[in-house]
Length: 621
Image (tube, rainbow, N blue to C red; front, side, top):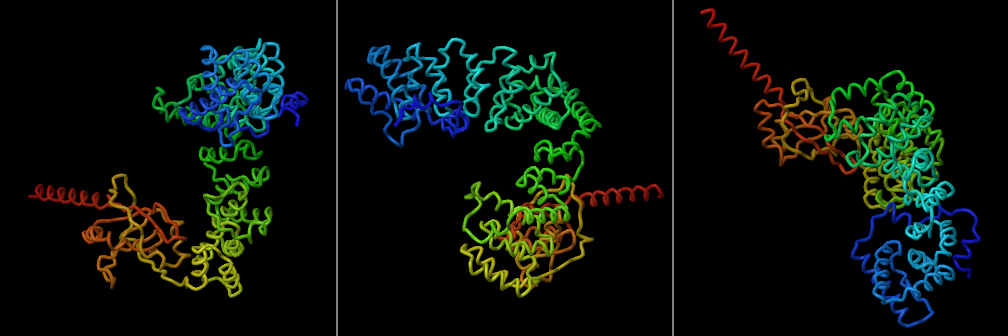
């Protein structure tokens, strides 16, 4: 087996895209606890001491397969080793020999990494450049050179050149360890330093936090393309870091914002203005006339220039879908399927499009999304396996299945299309797809033909999940011809008021005995639900119905909570509730109950009227 050094020396190019634990640990993962770092460092030091005392040429280090990677504790380890050398407990010359042996002759990866860590202090100068050149080719080894590389003459220039040649984790290493010393480096970082197919976002966030924006914005050769490029970096940074933790926020507001307003020409420039503005308005530590600032920003965003940029981006599928959707509120646009189709043409799995259309799309848009999904994806690949796997256990492997689930959620009010896709979905690969399909079929239970019921029965027989199996049984054997009760709401109807009083929270009772189709429609349409007494109820003399805006009764206030509420209603008070959450699959509807301020206003008005009437009487007398 060839030793690591020789293999890497013969390798041409840079291997920065191989998965690197070192890269992830230093830049993404949380550090292991300090106590554990010290313990691991002590264990390795003890092994080296034993080896030194035994005067053996055999190396038996880091043999424990469960041991943490050296990258987790190499700094503490080196401090301890340096102390042992200073105290003359270990001979420095022996460490030089060991370091060279580990780097040049080892076939084991961990031994080489240990040699690279020791090279910070215990490698001859004549070997330094050769070692750095060789091991900086690999993202697996380069992070162990972070201290060693600084022993090179002109090491910052070396890192600068490395960042321009390398990719992936090696490029990240070079940029993170490089000092931003002059305008040349500063400009490179902003204009090209972040460009990488794997770690671009990470590099963007790091670079924008260390560059000198003032210096860059004073450049004479600054053009529209460079401003747009800078806006892209700033957008990513503002989306990743809380504004209150940003150190150069004043530069963003005072220098970058006016510049991008004047010279920016793309969607990223527009979005950077929006992000800076909303963060300034939220930040209590920024002192300015925020009313005037908000008005000025609104005037800018709604100007013809930026309107045109937004709609051009929408047409060309520029910018991130999530950002385009967010900005649509500024321009009062209800984005349709046709508006967002260019984004699906760019990426047929664009989650944001599916989510937006399913949640907020019109009937026409949701139907088009369903048709697009059926034409683009092989539904047969998304059904048949019927795995008993819950949402929190899903991996990237099931991405298409989750898109199927979102499409189903958007199709529940589409008839017959929603019913037809659900008859396939009840055989879905994951629980979420089957669960949503069952919910839709419950809604259309009375409209299922005998042939369609046979399909449901087949799914019932194949279903492994006990809960889903019981829900399929309900589709098969429980009639949906349940209560379709409506009441006149004219006398109980109220408008919300800022002074309405919150009373309690309830779980609506009796909803499972209501017609599923009517119930779902009411929950989709109504924003407010009115409470009205049912004094002739045979089972509960304090019964209170909960009525939607169309007059459909969705259920009752639970008996254990209706005593005080019924007394208020009997006393002429007006009560209403807002549904806070519902899950018809589990027959759960939760709501907050409020005392309306309307009758208080009426009482005051009546009292004033009486006072005025009495005044008139006295004047006549």
